Image (cartoon, rainbow, N blue to C red):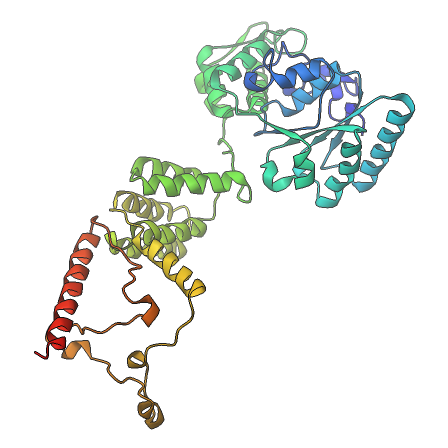
Length: 456
């Protein structure tokens, strides 16, 4: 429950030399902090509040390995307030209530605030998060929450409204390289005493593999150096080059959570890239999703939707291609089905675009909800019985195939909606031909009505 649980080597819970390199190299001061300068650079509001010990409740939101727990460590070192760290994985409602009661007692008896760091706060359920709220409102505690998930969805609205959210971004390759070089040169906490030389290309390969995650980078560096040390000759030094690093790398774990925000970010990127007719971006985002383990049938469903929503009748074949890709994935499975999905995504990206069907349906649905639900006009009703015929069901209906022009000059909308056009085809792709037809039929209907009105 105390800070030593999350920050082991700061409290001496275990020898620093035996801790993982990522833990040993964790910065303890702002000066040692790499990255996130937009958030904690000199003179930034958050850093100033921490240094003045005037911190208010905050939520740190960012991917793994970007410095959330490290920033909590710095707060623990700098603050004069009582500091307690929770892990959402290990703590329950009872532990939370006990600490809240102690925080209230300390503030009333000693006038001392308690800063509570909650790692992975998104893993706490509503009841657990609610337990913090009264003490936050009373000022007994300052909450510092860390999460990899979008706080808008994972943190209670009441708690979120009383906290300021700071977004931590993935570290750049240059920042990761700086962290790696520090670890190699540090003789006390890092790898400075290791009999291994690591060249710059190898470090660059590690930095690229880490994908913005300092912990991943340091873990890979440590395992690579350890493996190289085992191959050296007695009394000599080993060397790590890019090829040696590549042998240590199995497969990069892509940042992805099929139930979280990144899931929606990536499908949004795929959809918008196809809409903007960018096949290269479309196939890239598709690959990002599939390689991270996304359900291929989910992707197929989105492609089918896109085919009618964003291509529509500008290329009627698009829907067939998308449905065929879905069938192919269902039939042959993965990974073989990835090319069928790629074919569909590229086809959709390069097809002419129209959202006329999508907007037509929205407008028609709005009319169905807003306007009076008028009866179906008599001439459009089915008349299978004698009574229905006597009630004029079907009276006035004209069979289009019997008309000379193949179209009859009758209205098929209810009286209050006559003249409304829900579907407005564009001038793109096949819809240009559809528009030509509709305009021609409308002119023909008008001519037929005029002729029939004049008794011709």
